[in-house]
Image (tube, rainbow, N blue to C red; front, top):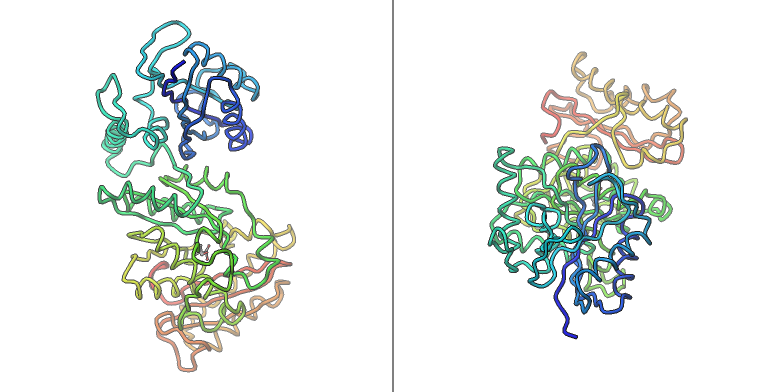
Length: 463
Ligand code: PAF
């Protein structure tokens, strides 16, 4: 019997969505008369219709070769759905697995059980985006456009309605930098600007503020999630670093990213062929001297090495970094200056109501350490008062003010110092300062926290 080219959409917004997809695809592949020829990337998407506040979906499309009739295939899809806990309930409501028959060759059908092509195929960005990866030139019968053209058409209509820069309904999830680079190259053929937010995951509101800013300033927004072993001087710190890629992908989708990607160290540096010593270190430069550079030897070289490589994979127009890691922003500005791109955008630190800077490491604080941690911001603001209200300009005196404010905090202070942000120096400047940034690193229990504050009257986020 001859086989027909068939496309099936997968959707899930309950349970372990990735595991369900993997298992459903295995079941499809094991179905007699069905061969799975290709599967799109997985996309994280906003729910469309159905109850409000339901979780975000994962969507993908599988291309099959099928020797069954469409009705027989439909029964197989329903069997696989119910084997994965699907209960038919509220239309468009939450579900463990949804398998929709989109296209069955060129067949059209309109029976109570089955409509082909799928009746809402042409209106749904979350179906067209994965389908476009497998069959971008395939003609759609109702609108007469190709899949890729219809996707671009929907996106333009959505942008026009929102006055430009609409948050996308779908966020592509690429599992390697190679896939991400390919994804970006295809879209940039249209000349789109790319905003890039590099992260190590465990995303919080501070990261999401960067994604939202990137969304407002670029046509494409991409986020990387990679816990970079090269920048950890302490292996235990690397192991304990919080990781939840699925939650991160959902969060950046909600904040408006078009694509999120991850990868392994060896995918980022394929030329190293699995040998760490073959990764060429990028020297971080003079901004790495002192403070973080002194307390975390090698840290900034690790940051410079991965950030340079991320810029090579992504080729962003603009890259977004949080001011909480102030010394890091100086290091990445230097990398961008050397390469001639991208534009570095530094966004103000997001804080908890008690002043604690938002950080992925805050999740590791036990209640006692969490209670102590706001003393860091209190010490920084004490230095700022001394600068602004008493006219104090001596680094040593400002440091004394911070140390005094931290004395009873129960925190173990690594440094509490002041620097001229435009003339970075390894040690505290001796001459009275014209501009100043106060920087603190301290341990709250086992967790190392850093924060900083501009003392002079310029805006946070500006150098
Ligand atoms: O700031 C971070 O999270 C990391 O240092 C970065 C820039 C993503 C590089 O790994």
